[in-house]
Structures are given as C-alpha cells and as structure tokens.
Length: 242
Length: 76
Image (cartoon, each protein chain N blue to C red):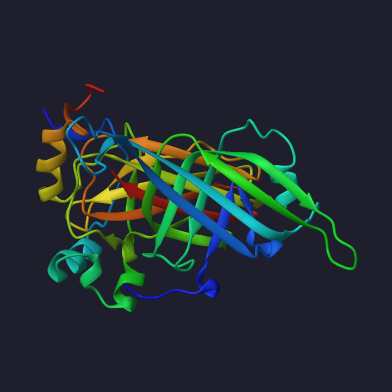
C-alpha cells in the first residue's frame, strides 16, 4: 500500500459542501469495534470478545471560519441534528482511488475559535449514524458541462460481489441546468452496462445522496451523468461494495 | 409474430454495430487503447425501451435475471 500525505487528501465533502477550501489543518477518522468484557471467575487475565458492533467518528480542526455561501460555516453552523452524507478521499481525487463514505453523519459539535492577531477558525466533530463504507471513486469531483459516462474507462473490481453496495453522490456546484441525474452502472463483461444505482434528479447545489442496492454487483463499474439544458455542475460519484 | 426485447427493470448502455465488434474483438472496453476507447459510442436504453440489439451474451444473462423481457410485436 502506498504512503500518502496531506497533499493527497482529494476532497472532504459534507452534504454537497466541499470543505477543503477552508484549509482544514487536521482530519481524524476513527472506527471502533465494541468489545464485551468476557472474563469470569477462574480467569486470571482479561478477556474481551467482539460484540459485532462498530461505530465511527470524524473530527476536523483548524479550518478557516468562512461564512461565504456554500462554504463550511453554512454547512455546519445550524441543524446539527441534520443527517448528512459525507465523503472523504485520503488518497487523491482520482478515478479508481479509495474514499470513505458515511451515509449519515451529524456535526454534533461545531466550535468557532477566534484569537487575537489570527484568522478565526472552526473545529467540527461528527458522529456517524449508520454504516461507514470504503469505496472507490468512479467520478472524481470535477466540473461537467454536458452529458458524460465512464463506460470506456470502467473500474475493474476484479470480481463481482453478492452483498449489494452503496453509491454516493455529491454535487457542490450547479448552475444553468434544469436537472441532473447521476447513475452508477455495472457490467459483467465490460461491454454491456446496466443501471445499478440511480440518484434523484438534482436541481440545485449543494446536494448529496447515498443510494443502497442489494444483490449482485458486477465486476466492472462506471457512471453515467445526464444533464438537462445548458450550464455547469461540479459532481462526485463513488461506490462501495458490501 | 416478431419478438422484441424490452428493458423492464434496469436501463442499459452498450455498444452496437462496428463499436460492438471493436469492443468484443478486444475482449472488453478496458482492453482497448485510449484512442480506441474514446471512439466507442454507446446506445442507451431506458426502462421500457427496446434493447433487441443487446449483445447476445448479455441477453442470456439479463433474461435470466428478469431485467429484460421478450415481448411479441404489438404486445407492449
């Protein structure tokens, strides 16, 4: 596995907001598997057994406090009880690279940090409700001005899987178009692709959605983006097998 | 009575004609050169659309899964 540095963080997307522009100084993502203490009478050493329950938390610190439309403050200042779709790429904003997706994250703690002779900053802690998924970037966060698809550069997963999966889409900018529908497609033979997960029609940004699918997910994955009218969007799509 | 294939559960995208020949002969899209890949055009079929020209190998698979169905001409 390759080593990655801070420059490789490709995106931090929360509910359709791109937070990298706020110059986040640190991002901590932790996953914890709950263990039960199963030591009993007669045991002379501790004993722990996994209970099959995990939880994840995310914390970001040192981001600039930025209250421009579409920036971090707008995303996080209110509605801390609102569930948000969150996607983070630690290894670059590139097709085929890994990302981590959370279908339900709550910014339960948002702290604005004002300091003399310094720019005001803000820290955020997220609690994840629901599953954490590790997936692959199929459409890097990028500007699109017309219909597109990635079938001709599909992602080869190496094999199909039978446990379903979850597709993530984030739209951080939207102008001109009257609609945009993104899809994840799969294929068994890298020739014929079928719709696997279809996201709801997007008519404004910021927008984010996670769509779960069940059953077989074929080996090859691609995305399809259909826009209506003329304009510009900035969109990301990824998929995680389960 | 003529029969047609209709997409009933999923939409599809696949190359047809010379594009299909190119991809099939290469063994898949990923086996093509970048310039060849860029030249491949896909036919898109939405749910309810006619997919009678779907590649044969895929027809077998998607008929079995119920994603496409055979209809008699004039039946749908």
